[in-house]
Image 1 (cartoon, helix red, strand yellow):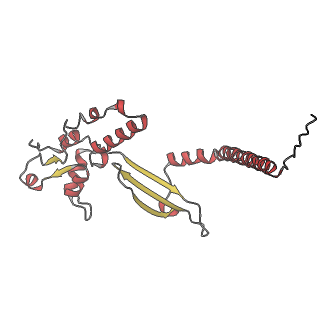
Image 2 (cartoon, rainbow, N blue to C red; image 1 turned 180 degrees about the vertical axis):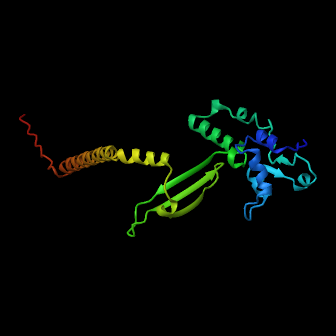
Length: 214
């Protein structure tokens, strides 16, 4: 199958990009430091041919991963009658991960931010992890001051979490109380069985004497 050369406008439609054609053209006219135009296009899943551009051709881009229906039957290969719910969910997730292209704007990217307790210095460590396609994450560790201010949506979410802390503490206390009661009940039953067994062992046997009257 021959891959068709595309203009920037056609490439945006074919690759489902959110950037404009002016942005794509700026990659050529306005280099970003050490990042070449080829690398910028590759990040969007496009192949840039500089020779075609120099030759005056408007269609100088190609899709790195042409759209194909070859994988459309992949989900049909899974026999759902032989899988439980967890297996179906796992298989579906793996299938999606396999079908997603390695194009940043067209794949699911997971970002996890973990705020660790403040240290003695007063700085709060933060762990940031990013992953995609079910592969291992890339991780960075820094301090919250270096991270800067969170976006308003995250700030609102954290405020809701802090407001729910009293309820969460009550739920934890209730759970801990149940665990203590359960442990006490089990300990009491064990002691009772031990005392009963000990009593049966130490109880003296009664001597029975039969006297025949005739």
